[in-house]
Image 1: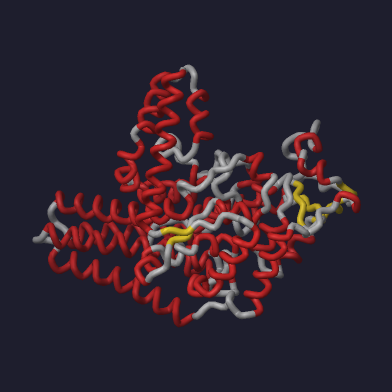
Image 2 (image 1 turned 90 degrees about the vertical axis):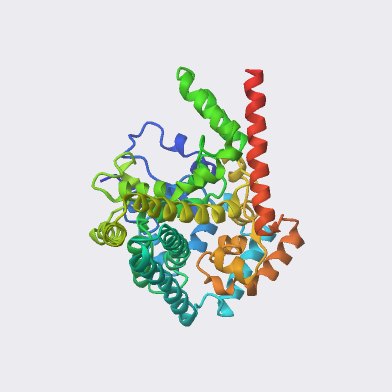
Length: 457
């Protein structure tokens, strides 16, 4: 077990320059220090038990005050106290005084007092029930006509793809603990909707998605934009061309993909769900996280492993029981995967792609809330947009207040936009089509940058 540093006084520069602080220490001995509300905590021993996954590592060597307040209930302070090792020196303390950040914190307190963090159980009961009806409808169609009709097979597979997409949004809400204050129930519903119904590991999702929330559109930290060379979202990623100087074939393939990524966009999205399902399976397998540092590995329960096994059991059973023609089986598989992959990824792209990608150095100098806002894109609300995106068309509001249930975002949106205008923080909103055009425009800009690099090299 690593030795815990004794209680002492630190300067902020010591924490921010964590490499120098740990100089001469073995990796297993180096503390994982972070600042929260001018106190210093060594969270190394807590990382494997952190319910949110390895996202905690994104703020080692940084000030994590606002990200901690945003993601954790009051009870978490008691757990955090177990890892207290010191204080920031009096003369070096950060004043919670950035006016914009201070007003966002006030908004959060106001919204809590107004009950906007309280979910409507009737709303979520309806959403879950309606979504399960899509599953039933898909199964009825394939069971009744799947043996004789290719059209029915396609219709069933399409509805199944929509069902999976909507399961994604519901699992997202439950795992963000928007619905239940008791996190056990949130995790349980997340495992059912995300694991059994959709085929995504809850632990894999938390590990990936929480890291995205902590560092949205930060190059080298946000896993959601780490898709080079399949899709490349910024000039930062083009530096990777030089990472493989001796692998000419790899470099040529990467450049080909980037130069043509606007053409490959939808075909790539068609396989997105399969990729995420495979990542989930690998994540929950024994030794599936062997590539991660021991402190960053997420404990996987048997229940979660069984949830994925149940998903693939019912999915393949549906195909083999109700579809006899091998060609139609392939059609059912490919259509369901492609529909869900596109419907999920289109929304993901609307949320952040085409918005500014910031470097790690820029992120350090930017407050947590500004980072959430300038990297996100709201989509104009409508009955269809709210349903299709699972409420994530209020992406900025969700990133500022991630544990607020989606049905209350419309109540807070005007206040958030007004505050952004007051402080000159860019608040961007557009339509579904307009946002998709912006996504393609960004892909095209990066392709042109890659082309210039090729001509100059």
